[in-house]
Image (cartoon, rainbow, N blue to C red; front, side):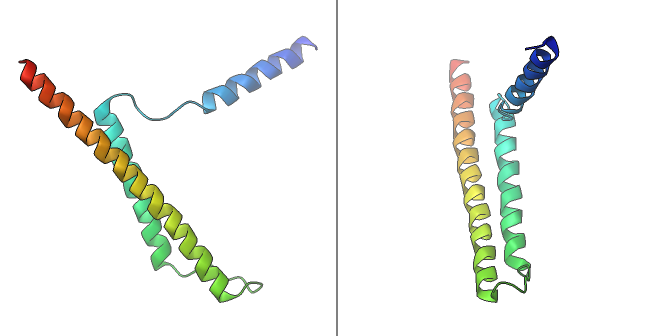
Length: 105
């Protein structure tokens, strides 16, 4: 391989690997804020799909569109519940750590 192709492969791999890193912060308070924010966003998306009319496509029947819209709403709702659960676990862990620090003093 030429040096240009090698350089291009290295850059491509660097971009791929850097994009695969986790975006979740390391500190518990930042994690809690992150999880609560994600839960709030997914809850809002779920509610917006519930309140908005389904997209109309003349090639599909309305019952299929309504069903599809409800499926998307359910997926967003599940994601909101998952992040709420993660936030609750993080909150409990944070409270436990704070209680241990108070006991040490």
